[in-house]
Length: 68
Image 1 (cartoon, rainbow, N blue to C red):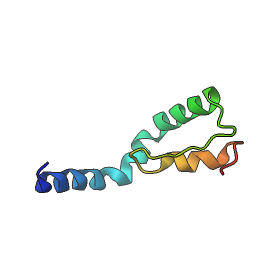
Image 2: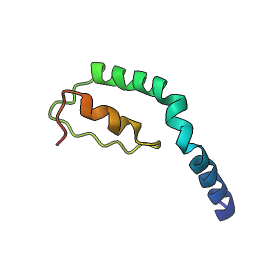
Image 3: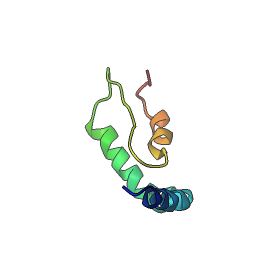
Image 4: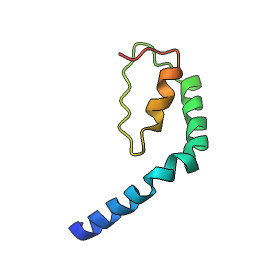
C-alpha cells in the first residue's frame, strides 16, 4: 500500500475515534452481553486484540469472571 494512502486512512480513523464509542456503544454492549451469556470464560484466557477503542475492556471488569 502506498505510504501516503496508509497515513490518510490512519488519519481518518484517528479523527473519528473520539465519537466512535458514543455512536456504536449501544450495539457493541448488546454484542458483549450476548457473548457473556453464551460463552463460559471459566478457566480460559481472553485476549482482546480487535480493532477499536477498547470498549470491551471497560465492560469486562463488571462481570463475575476473574481476569488472570
